[in-house]
Figure: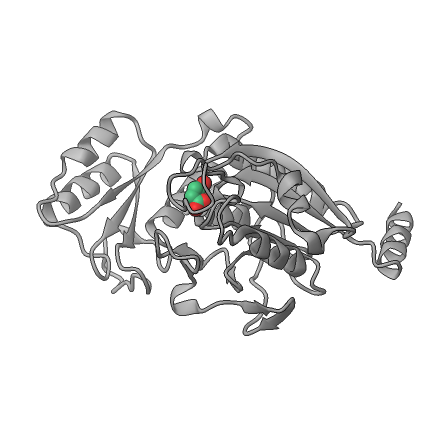
Amino acid sequence: MQKVVQDVVQEVVQQGRLKVVILGTGGTIAGTAAQAGDTIGYTAGQVGVAALVAAVPMLAGEALESEQVAQLDSKDMTHAVWLALAQRVEAHLARPEVAGVVITHGTDTLEETAYFLHRVVDASRKPVVLCAAMRPATALSADGPQNLLDAVQLARTEGAAGVMAVLAGSVHAAADVRKVHPYRADAFSSGDAGVVAHIEAGRVRRHRPWPEAAGSGSRRLRADPELWPRVEIVTSHAGARGTLVAALQAAGVDGIVVAATGNGSLHHELEAALVAAQQAGVRVLRSTRCLDGAVLDAGTEVLSSAGALTPVKARIALLLDLMTGG
Ligand code: SIN
């Protein structure tokens, strides 16, 4: 069996036929507006992934396959879609004739899906590349086609691995990527870590090693996403109180991530409520509201810190930790 698989890979490599599989999930990249000049009053998740691929002339004749996994505005992303997506990504990565997987996605929760896949899917040998757009497919200045082309290029780059996102010519690691602008086409940053690479005129110029893979398989997740642990996010701010934490506790949450001020500091009223929740068995993680950097512990803190994870990524880390035991 191993020999047969090796032969197939040998043959497809020799003939340059390794495929890229493109999974569609919706987003602005698949969005439409009534007028080409409209870049805000559009509906996300309208165009099928096959049509998105067909709209890029340079992809014609390429060894590609597409599959629609979901069709939504990514603000409405669900754990059920994440599970289905992880399973489809794993199934395609396991195929010897597949070089890598591309996912078309909305920009609003792209960093969450990317981080979830990074923590779940084993991308140590093949890349998983998310791409998106800030302008709908109907826009005069649509950025989706170029981002999709760049993503396919990255997915078939020899030696590439890990979960990444490609937007506006920048390649971001899933662990670092975050949306930092609500409108500009170049809306993403990798913060202090910096981008992994740039894609320029179809060439990948790499600045640091491919991201390390951290996924141990979707089979470790509970089959019913309704039964996944419930983890919510609260924010520390002027005038913060403990009532929200008490309400979450009463609602039966399993974990709370707090978006703390500065280096993980908390309003004393909110802190008291979080410590009480932790003593009652709720897992609590402190992340920071700051856009860059990591929470640095002095070693005496009662509430654990999330290090460099943003609040939304810390929520995923805690969710997975609660579900799979670390
Ligand atoms: C979405 O996230 O699905 C809509 C917004 C976007 O893709 O830019």
